[in-house]
Length: 438
Ligand code: GDP
Ligand code: GDP
Image 1 (tube, rainbow, N blue to C red):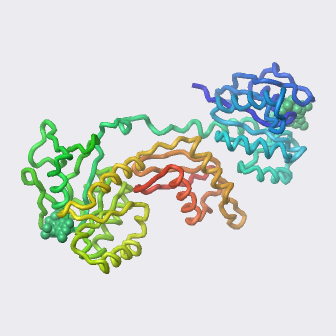
Image 2 (image 1 turned 45 degrees about the vertical axis):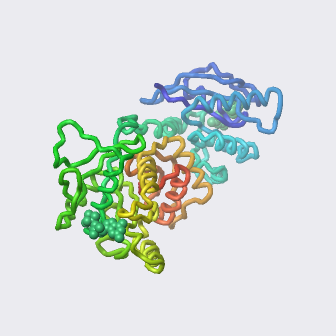
Image 3 (image 1 turned 180 degrees about the horizontal axis):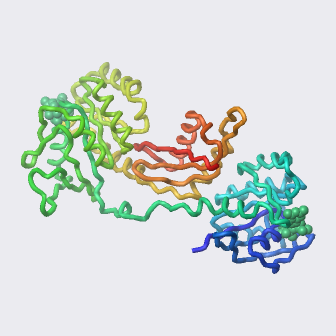
């Protein structure tokens, strides 16, 4: 399927001329009268190896509430809806106008990826007249000359670059029947076997035998409230018939393997012991693995209110890097607080396998940059152009742009917060990678 590019901008900036350039036809009317190219024009374009469909639009006249202008705005909105990417054209010679601002706002509302170009930039070598256009909040401004054919090839590459990226795959992750792989991790004696046996003993939770699994099977498939799970045989546990029991030695390798093969890890802590160094290490492995995580503090029945306060504080100070995880206070023996743990496990899995489309990520990125741009570092001002998803469980967001090596950790955290909020990501790490194009 050919990608679709829509040209949007106020009248007379050179959209039709650019349309002709892109389609190499003469059939769009070029004339110096505002509002002459009307409706939508469609053309086939080919520049270098890129083939695409281009739509020329009349542009928005946001103030005009009626008549031909209103119709133009409607047509333009339709063209934007049909497009994969918008080329927003402004006039380098006339400079920034109020109408450009209105169009920018409208485009932001429509949420399509946009490339901002300043046309009629032939002979403007210093680019100083283009800086005003940054106010529009679309990042870098690309100077071109549609009439003289300058900068067209680069423009097309820039516009189509994000579209060539693979979208997150529609693969088996989609299968609602696919079990969530769950590992219960924790140091010896925190209550892992007690919890698992409590769970597996509950009638709502039906363990089922897969053909060919033996008593020593390395995982236990089961179902709860219609959701299938697979309990990864957790490090430090051994199956004996239908129940799990603890084995003497704690194995780091086994813990790591269990964590790696899970989708979600339930990190179990012991309220009577507080957060120990070993707990912090296991938490560190989980974070590094990128798996989704839920924290449960067991033996809540055995501690008084003073100890409860202590441990809540310890979690904040010793496990700050798991702030994204939900926290539960439970008693495996008394079967208290277990229901919400399941909810969090399902929620964490959902967050970890969330699909984020390139247009939506790009729109959020540009909105975040407009709200607060990355700081200049010496001569360099990092410019963020678009974002796409690079993986799931953990979700990875890859941001493309220029001079991104100068983006601070604090700024990355700011972006992470915005993405987390927008996609409602709870219980999963989120990785942000920056790719600078030369
Ligand atoms: P539209 O209304 O946005 O479709 O604009 P047109 O394509 O009709 O162009 C408006 C005017 O700008 C025409 O007179 C064009 O010749 C002129 N124009 C278009 N592109 C360029 C360019 O790159 N440089 C200069 N100097 N003029 C241009
Ligand atoms: P594992 O080594 O992590 O599998 O821990 P176990 O399940 O063997 O439990 C270790 C000890 O903690 C046992 O004596 C359990 O009875 C006790 N225990 C487990 N869960 C709870 C709980 O919720 N409350 C209390 N008070 N003790 C518990």
